[in-house]
Image (tube, rainbow, N blue to C red; front, side, top):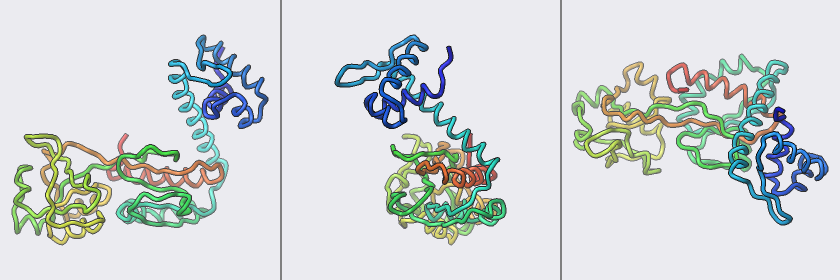
Length: 301
C-alpha cells in the first residue's frame, strides 16, 4: 500500500505539535482519528516512527529519517500547487522587497521595467538595507540575502550563487602594476569592508592556504562604495560578480589573479513567510529574477 499525502501531513503535525491532541486540534480531526492515521502509516512502512508514552513522544531513528523526507515531499507539493495556480490566475497586489543596496542596484533595478510589463497587476515597493532585517517589523514580503543563510523559521529559496573576484581598474594597474602572485598584493592599496571582517578574507589560494586575509588601506561599509572606489582607481577590491559583471564587460574593472581564485561563490537566497495569497506574487518575482541572474552566469545549478 502506498503512503498518502494526508498521512504525511498528520505525521508532521504530530511531531510539530508534540502530541496527538495538539495535532488533532491543528488539522481539525479527532485525536482518535489522528492516532489511527499514524498507526496506519507505521503499518504501511513496516516500522515504528514514534515511541509513544502517556507523557511524551520521541522519534525513532527511522522516524527522524522519514520526517525530513516527509517535509520535503509536502513542501514540493505546496510549491507545485502554487506554480499551477500561476497558470490560472493573474497575480496582483503590493509586493514589498528588501535587499542590500548593491543587489538592488545591479541585480533588480535593471529588470524592473520588463517585470512590470510582464506583471502589470503587481505593485512593487523596493527598499534597501545592508543589515539583516525583521520581515514583520519592516513590513517586508520578501528579502534577498547574500552569503551563508543562518538557521531561520523563514521559508528560503535559493536563487543561485555569485562568484567572488579580485578586481582593479585599468588606471590603477597602469600606475601601480598588475600583481601576478597573491603575496604581491601586500605591495598594493587594498580596499576592504569595515564590517563584517569575514568579507576581508579573499578567495585566493596561496602557499599557506585557500584564502587570503587582507590588511586594507581603505575601508567602507558598503560594497557599492568599494566598487566606486575601485572604478576610480583607488585600489584593488574583492567583490561579487552580480554587482561587477557590467564593469568587467565594459572594461571599467579587470579580473586579477584568476588562476589563484579558489572558486568560492556567494549564495543568494530569498526569504519570506509563506502566505497563500501572497505566494503568487512572490513566485512570479523570484522566478523572474532567478532567470535574469542566470543570464550573466551568476546563478548556477
